[in-house]
Image (cartoon, rainbow, N blue to C red):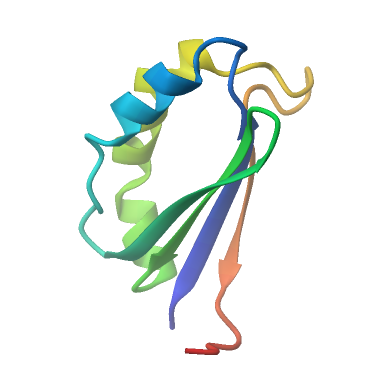
Length: 97
């Protein structure tokens, strides 16, 4: 069953261009069927990924953290509890394609 993850974050002022340039080097990871980055507001973005399964995303967790570490210095802290990202994930229950 497909699995989805979404991550909300805010880029530091003056860092959006650098953030986007670094992201252009990222490719879908093994087991990742699709990924999108969209802008939700002033310096706020959301990343969404669709995976073959929960096991597929779990197998790539270290690689995803590695990608985050490449841009972490460009992100604002959302809160002390969340840090720089607000991630959620779960099983896809409907596919509208």
